[in-house]
Image 1 (cartoon, rainbow, N blue to C red):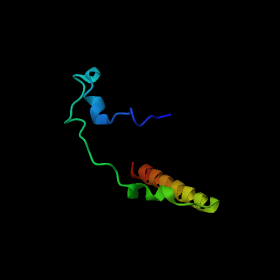
Image 2 (image 1 turned 90 degrees about the horizontal axis):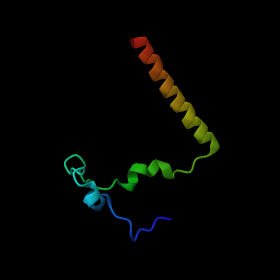
Image 3 (image 1 turned 60 degrees about the vertical axis):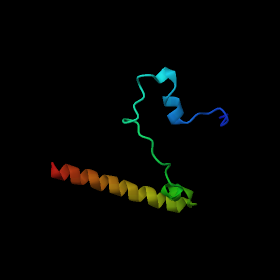
Image 4 (image 1 turned 135 degrees about the horizontal axis):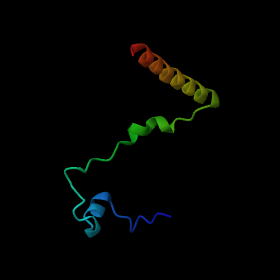
Length: 73
């Protein structure tokens, strides 16, 4: 189980002496947390038929992209 009282954040972990010479704040910038709205689609309740339709559309999208790539070469 994760104990959040002793868990440290990434920024603090990178300042640990173990990582001396590895941490580079320019290469690993600190950013703002991602908004919960970015993952709103994951909260939807989907019926079995809805999932099938989404999978079907994804397969069509991927296959049409492959067909276009093959035709272009």
